[in-house]
Image (cartoon, rainbow over all chains, first blue to last red; front, side, top):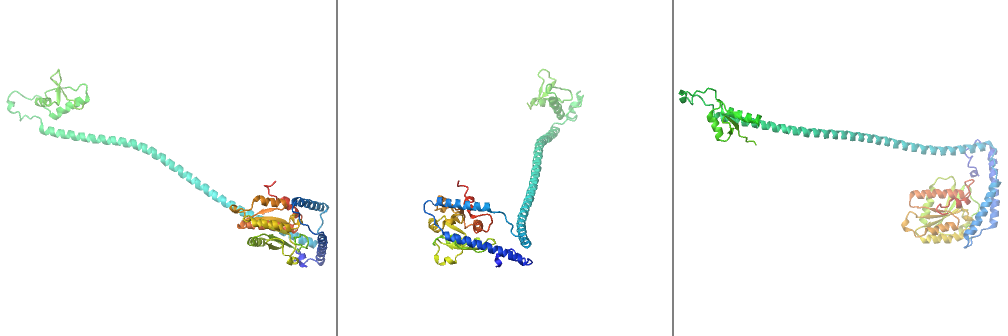
Length: 271
Length: 177
């Protein structure tokens, strides 16, 4: 009997008449069912004809749906019971069901929220990562540009430095050459001393002007040629020792002026 | 008396009975276990049969059957023939919503021996819903069990306001017009 009343098995406070009432209700419903059952049994069943199965089935369906429709039309909403204990028990059950459903919904929504939060955190982390990467890219491109300008300047500076190096090398070489030349000239072509011509000193030959070395003569000639290439002629004066002049002329280092024997110039070896 | 009758016995209280008819016993067993695993608040009896008619010797012990599910395996033409033969032994009032066709093995498209047309035709002729499932896949197995459980609930009358008559119209495949 207990299985007829699943709702109030745990409600022991309920008075006896509520149980009785429900039991009576259930008994009457069961009786009705038995009546219907016996009516159906009388009708028996029929199997479907092989042809026209669908048609006969659809006709039966129409009849059944019509019957159900009529049933629904006749039916009015009825109060289950006036007994407060029964209503209380039923109400508790409904609320319990609702509570369970809502708990399920809550759990689902919470898990969804957690999922969303995780996704949001991940998204933020990735955004941060992206910003850092962009900064790195910006910094690298700046460095690249700086390097580019630096290399430009460096190349110019380097060319300049190379030229300067060459210049200094050439200058030192030139210094070396002039020193060597000076030494050579000083050693082999000194200023003619009075001692060398003491024999002839008795004659009236007396150096009126102080003679200059071959080195100095050459210097004068070179300077005149280099400074005033349009007028390279130097007037021979008494400080030039004539044998040196002859020496220079004989070996083609110097040339006389074609019209004026008192003027001479250095041969243009560089042209 | 060889036919299955829907209303010749009184129903048991808070109980529903499902009959699975199909040629593959293993699959039936698996499906039955899956259904029994589901959460429900009424008792379920699941009867397995290879074909109809059911042996008449134990007829008085059998409870009233609320839903008959015919299982067709897409890989074997024999299962389709078996089901077609068994349909003759079902009373026509069963076809008002207490019968459904369950097509299994749809995951393997390569091994289709039964044509879709034939199955759809069957569903249309007998005005019954056709369910497709793949019982090898866990998810599909659970989903099918839940669907069958819900249908069984409605067929046994445990859901107030919904009657099995509506299955045929509400469970129509959208591809069919």
